[in-house]
Image (cartoon, rainbow, N blue to C red; front, side, top):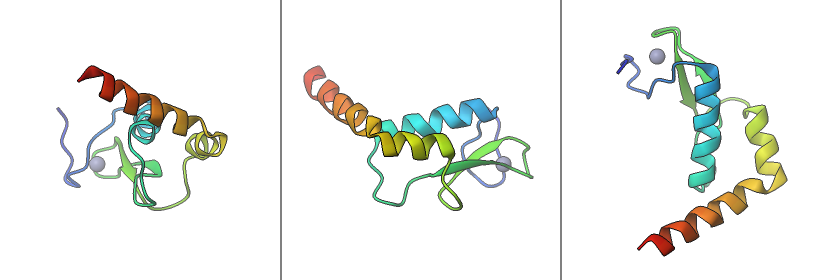
Length: 83
Ligand SMILES: [Zn+2]
């Protein structure tokens, strides 16, 4: 596994970082503190999440569409039913 001096989780490609970012928002409800975008790291050359800066466009659209809420609810029930 690649490690970066920032200590942040490394995503190898932009696509992977974006997928993971959208997925993270589908799983967790961030109260304004979660990751909003990803950036290319000067240090390792790969991608990390950031909670600063403008929100990722796809994420913004997803949040606005209300689809994430449905996914969050689905995950919630899935967990309940699995017990
Ligand atoms: Zn890095």
